[in-house]
Length: 223
Image 1: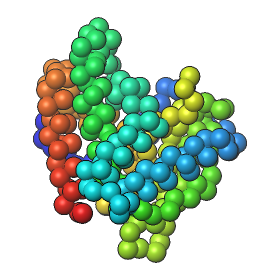
Image 2 (image 1 turned 60 degrees about the vertical axis):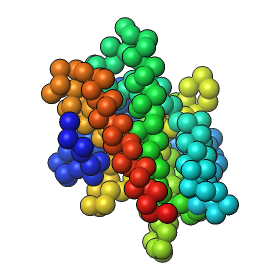
Image 3 (image 1 turned 120 degrees about the vertical axis):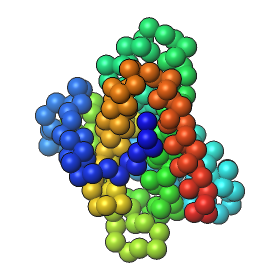
């Protein structure tokens, strides 16, 4: 698989944005204060960690990784992004453990790469929409990139599980100005690659490990 940028063409982004999650029926008008507080606390902590001058680069990365691992539902996301190929993980416990670990590294590196320009910035939650009453909620936040005065909208899709709220996807603005849901875009990329390589998840793991290392190097180079 060629290393593909997550800022893809407008056509693919439009396709990704129209995908409907199986667990997210028609939206309700209600806000959810509990989900909003969850994002305000945990997302603010993650941004603060990236911008903490008292931490070294590796310490920032480790702290950010731990925080995102805690407030995101990585095992569920790791299975979802594989679509029908996720059946392989159900039949092979070892493969599922390997894939979940590799995908988690990739997903958190993607979050860090995308959110690094907001490091140290104040995040303010401004609203939410319940997609499924008290179960699936999109939380809207505002944050200002470093060196800019205009705020940017970042949306967080949360699921309620047995352990409380967990982030399932993140919507950001790409460099070309398009708005993208990272999880949906990752799923589309993965399904395209698995469709071309005969469903070889181990080959996909090798490819995204390369992308993970590249993103971390870019973040380190930014200082």
